[in-house]
Image 1 (cartoon, one colour):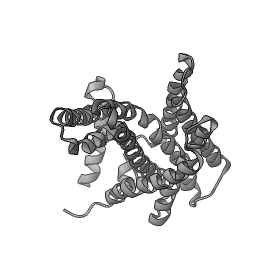
Image 2 (cartoon, helix red, strand yellow; image 1 turned 45 degrees about the vertical axis):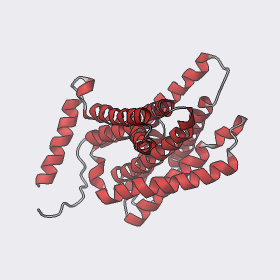
Image 3 (cartoon, helix red, strand yellow; image 1 turned 120 degrees about the vertical axis):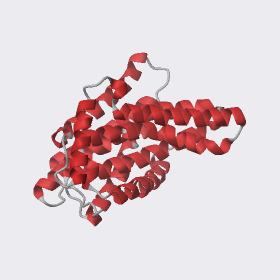
Length: 284
């Protein structure tokens, strides 16, 4: 009873926070604090030459944006209450890791080197890699609700996005610590509108259908959303690799990001408020 009341208070506080100025919102405070820690670690590495702190700097920089989106989504929907915390942690670590393994293997086979239309294959490799791990966890754990599917999807996408961003930063280290940190800053700002939005949108639609039907089935809406998120992912990466093109073309990257987030947000509007399916809280 106390845990339920506490969760309801959190949701109400989140709604009230949405009426405050942006810098008082919890997700914004999380982003600022995480990025500040990342920049501080990068400054230590640069000023002292101690490169051992760089992985930590890149981790916090890569996680800033995704964690901020998770906090904002949790305050709005309460999805974390639908899946045990240890399962979400395992999905973040191993679901994201397995998705990286699958994505990295098939990217190497069918995408690299990044020349011409090959880049358009990325979304059709990495999105299935994330989605398959979510479906596997959901099937094994018996999670069939829209809230639980969204929670698992965002956990997997966060693990994938953080590890991918860290890889980009580490590859940039020879060009300078702060050049690599800039990569993390940019990706920390953009990945919530990419990996998390794409996987979250698919999971919201798919698990919404499965919750209503009581079983996992493939329907035309689910197939359509799957193709759409793959296409958005591919367009996103393709626009990032273009060179010597008009500025207007690069602005399309923002259009893809905005479209991805709007689709994600609209697909989860019905989840606003406390979860009706809470994970049991041990006595005491």
